[in-house]
Length: 377
Image (cartoon, rainbow, N blue to C red; front, side, top):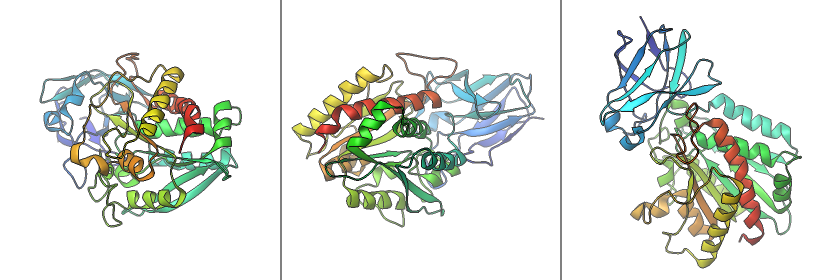
């Protein structure tokens, strides 16, 4: 009989009935303290060379039901190499059809970024460059470390660039993005990274939501807080992750800010700025325009035709990281969004948008930052 398990780092699924491999009935599991349900990550064993049909019966009631259209799940036999498997959505149920080639196969909503790899990212950055300093900001509600990396040497006139990722823990592409960015930034042979570190100091939080990441949540931390709605009034009791990062920002200042995310429905890479802020200035508009133009020149994976509409977040606007930071510091501030699906403009059906593409996209953003660094506030 096939078996399904998810009791591991970022594992999440509910099994209704797995007795028939041709009709496995599943439910997306909600975040531990909220109703958000979309992320899944589980292992199927005992189905080698058998035609598996996996039905997610509550997909139509998930957080973003539109995200299932034209979406294919990811799978792996070794948890290192992930590929896409065929899926279909009838408006209520999302179904995967796949014939595993080995005794065990892992399925996930997007290529996972494990807590162990996060630790390796922190340690590796410290080993790669003498210009990297670990800033332990504090602890999460589950007692995990909330870490920032300070990269660069303080100096007169240097700009302060902040980058945060994975406020929403299921958006694992965000930490892949940051991994690629950090590797390029500290690479002595990377001319763009060297030039930037001559002009700026970076503060990078690779994972804003460690607890949600390990728990297998889509959008919230251990207390059920959506961190990207906590920036106006965070608390140590509900959203210590935001409270602690904000505290460090107020100490260091911010001249540019990038907050890295993933979008369930839109099959494009795009940015969202601070245009809806009452304080949004012509200077900020000019910086945004220059940043976008430079990124368009640096990466064909970036585009500006598709994205969020005006007034997307209404009265919540200043509770979002990008908008709060842009308002508080009067600086360039952008949310970066990447797809859970493939990119419609340059698809790679075998893997879709994945970790490696996110890594390379992260490295490319340094070109855009270099283009505007001299003009930053």
